[in-house]
Structure formats: C-alpha cells, structure tokens
Image (cartoon, rainbow over all chains, first blue to last red; front, side, top):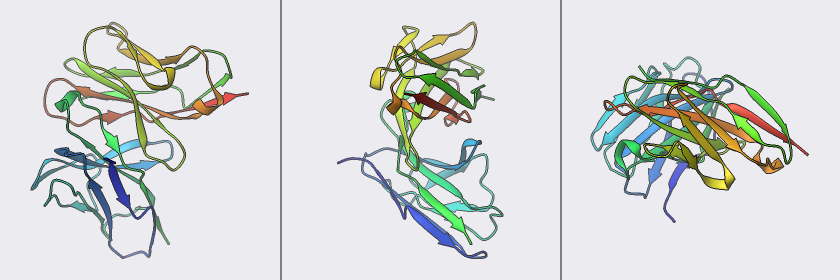
Length: 114
Length: 114
C-alpha cells in the first residue's frame, strides 16, 4: 500500500545526543515536510523540500537538519543544539494537484529527552 | 503572511446534535483551505478542502465546511455528531499566491458525549 512511513515511533535520547528520525514515502510525491507538534501549539513547520537536493527552513529550523538525497526519503536530525526537543514529530508529503493538493501524513515519531 | 485561527480550544457536543468547529484565516491572495483530523498518537488525516467553486464542501465521514469569503471563515460542520468523532481538528491555509507551505491552526479538541 502507498503511504508514508516514519520510524521509530518512540525514541528516547539523552541530552547532548543527536538523533535522526526517518521518513520514507512511496507515493511518488515531490514535496516533503517535517512538522513539530506540542500540546496547545498546533503544528509548526521545521523544514520542507519541494524537490530532490533542495530544502528550505520553516518557522522553527534552529537545532534541526535535513537532507533530501532521494525523492522517497527526507530524514530529520535533531541535534544537541535543539534546546527543547521533546515533542511529537510529523512527516508529510504532497504531490498531486500542486499547491492545491492535500498533505499526506505519517503516523509520527515521539521523541523524549531524558 | 498567511495565518489561521481556531478560536476554540475545546468544543463539547452531545451525540446526535449538530457540531461546528470554527476557523478563520488571513491571506494576501485567494485561500486554499483544508481540514484535518487527528486521533491520539496518530498522524493527521485529510477531511476536506476548498480550492474554488461551490462554497459548501463535502468531505469524509459526513463532514462538510462552508467557505465564507466576506467573513474569511471556513467552519467545519456535521449534522449529527458521533462519539467516534471525538478527536483533535486542525484547519490549515495556503495562499494561492506564491510558493508557501501549508500553515496550521492550533487545533480544536472535539468531545462528543453520549
């Protein structure tokens, strides 16, 4: 079945460690996105990529990094520079319909810093 | 800049009664408007969208939304609520001008009481 796969679903990290969240899609979508969700704050955009080998910062990019070497994959690294990384992270993609097309979301990854 | 507001953090409704979840937006050009639903610890699921045409949009699970340009609103409605509709609902907007990602509201938690 086509969709977006995020892994791991739950992740624990010690302070000072980098961690990478995986996002893979088999929808043949061009655009991919990373959002952070905190209670009461909705979804905030971290990074997005509209084409392979290109990506742009969102509203809260500090302390995060991404790569887009393949169309199917858009991993997110949460670095030690991110001061409050505990959150629910959502990956999404869009393709059909251009800017009128809806986003398709993965099931999320919950990161907890110990 | 584009923005979206969901004025109610929580909406409570009795099962079988009609429900409304409110959303207002601000964009420079014409809006592309979306509603999503999220169940606990899951990703977001697309419900419906307004791009152009008929102001009343019908979507999944019996939901509909009405686009009102003069009031810059896009309220989500359902004639008869179910307990299973209890979830977190997000409104999102994208400006038809320019190359910008979707912006989400902070979400409204809907509780349907049996």
